Image 1 (cartoon, rainbow, N blue to C red):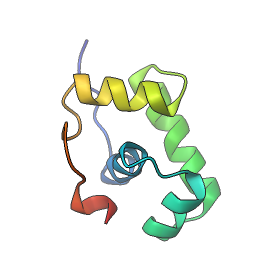
Image 2: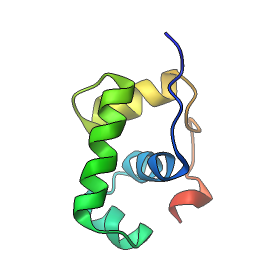
Image 3: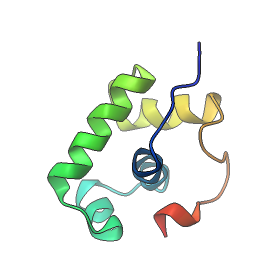
Length: 76
């Protein structure tokens, strides 16, 4: 399977998911609306071919789309 190309904002939302942040906390951290977070999550799910956040994080780690350990400054 090819690694999907993620936008910088999709990657930031994904990294917040890795940290276990919900939609509201992600929206506050990234200074975007909850609706926008939901749209980015839906886009990530389509690109990663998953149904939920847990699967998205697992697949992203398997495909080396995100660091396996630790958080990234994108979601700081």
